[in-house]
Length: 154
View 1 (cartoon, one colour):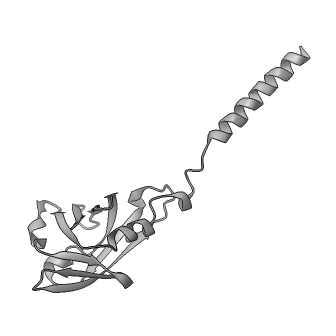
View 2 (cartoon, helix red, strand yellow; view 1 turned 90 degrees about the vertical axis):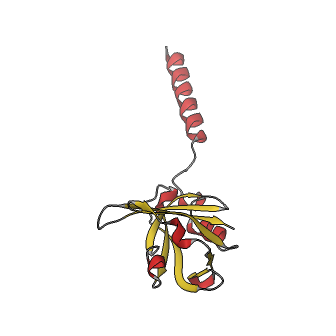
View 3 (cartoon, one colour; view 1 turned 180 degrees about the horizontal axis):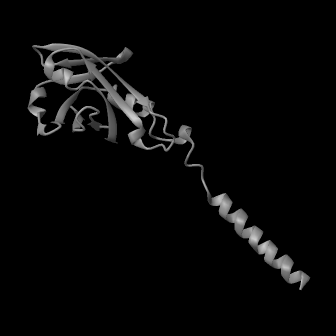
């Protein structure tokens, strides 16, 4: 009987140690691929265009036709059509909710003019990213409307 208890205990301990060794620490933010540096490195190369902009209740993508956006050094954002050039700021920040979700990252854009570019001024939630596309979403605090913005690399 004593040997049977030892065998059961050994089997239970073997199961526990085996199970624990298979676990990984998915909550470690440093191992996350969803950190600001990843997004910054993606948008810092080349030029980008707005391929979709939906403002609360209607699409306004055409407001940005012909403009190329450059997410430059020192958080300088430039929109250029060849004729018109507008300068704003940009940054990527982590909202630190510690679940390593891509939606924890905020893509911050600010333009002071013209009016159509001021519409882009917000702290956008990143909902999808790749090396050639960044999809953003913002839920307005004022009217509760939802805006969507997609940048695609040229």
